[in-house]
Length: 256
Image (cartoon, rainbow, N blue to C red):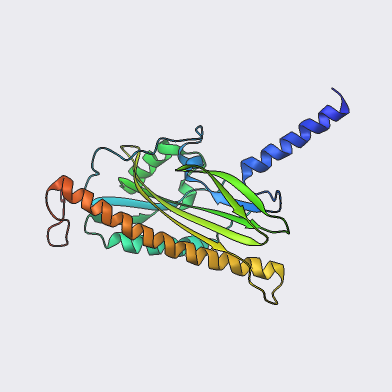
């Protein structure tokens, strides 16, 4: 094999690794993420995310966890960030009349690419029926030239474009019926922070924009989650033929 061909193959390998890890700085950008698509559908580009036909067993026993990062050398979100969002989502879910319990599942129990086989194990271990999978995607466009990143979401391929020093943050809560292997609903949250003139160093600006982006995306996610739960509650009421208020909750599950 010629020397030039060997060099070419090595370059191709490096590029492939960077794309797989999702965290290399390419074209003036840095991309960090934990992907529901990669976790649940590791061998598919476009998963079937149709809603379940059958209603979930009520009141719901829910597990809540962040999906694993994709082999990254460091995380875009700290464990403190994750714990804060998990607690906020769990508290709100626990207030719903059709929810019996919410269990916070450590991310260590979710294997990269574990898919529904992994969720089946968690279902037995934690006595849950529904899993809320939290994920994030963060792109920071550091440099003078505009850049873009393509990545896969539950709604298909999406393109993120950014100008110099923009910070884009996407959070997502995907709610799955484990037994049915179907998504019940999802609630995304996003934020785009554009740099403001100030005396901060670039590193400090990036750090502050990351914190602000997470806060804004979290607020957006919770707003969408409230809307989706309102729609989901109405769907349950139509299916059951009566109200899911606190005084008259829907219940298909034995009290024991």
